[in-house]
Image 1: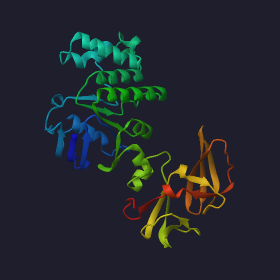
Image 2: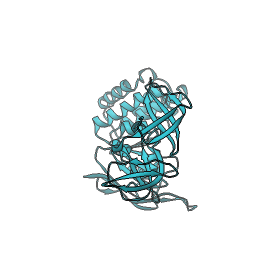
Image 3: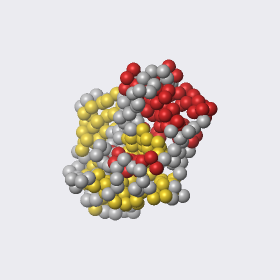
Image 4: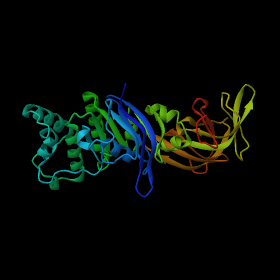
Length: 354
């Protein structure tokens, strides 16, 4: 059963700028949802409307069966963490973290138990007596996160909460956020443009662009079966390799003829003929002496456990993932093959997956 429902939610600013263009989304109780998209896509505005910090221009927000569209933030029972922390300067770290519990008359024993759990997990023991001005930016963000996580609201709303932290702290707190959410089973919406965060945290990812939802699905579904060219390009680092061309029938199967190239790529299945775009992830491109694509190495990037090999071909630039010990010289000629099971075909006009 859906716990949080957005129905044709719209936000248009007074100057006529559309931020969110009528989105629908149903979220189950206890689910961890990540809103993922580029800057300006509407993900933060959506979060702020759910929080009550932005008034929706149109549509409805329902939480636990109640219409909360016009309720004040204080009436919605949400815990909020934003990229730009706002700590009370006259309170030390301990009092900042406990403040939400004092507002709802929590017993002293319960406060101490929750404080101990959060502080231990986040490594804040030595900071409890300090004041915000004595903390680094990263530590202030950790305190802001602890203040939100010590509560057990109906919904957690998090907008880039790890944006100011270094990589080690991000990984540590990512684990903390997910474990706390699983323990408390609080419905969570998390905004980020960081794909690694999205993949590691989400039960489902909501990919947004230009105020609209492009795709909703489990991380593996969004990565392996993108619904559109935008999703295929935005999700993944690097994004999918693309080739423009045409699908033609070849016997009981189909083949892709890249535009301007003298080769044919077998698809291993039947696809509607016509102008299309072929997409394939770099890990499904392999060096193959009998492969249909010929090219020359432009760049070999050592990434630690793997290499990203950029190849100039008559089909366009193609990035191949290779083992770290398979170094290739710039200018080296290679032939490439594609894993048929992971080739995606997109409509040339609409950009939608076929």
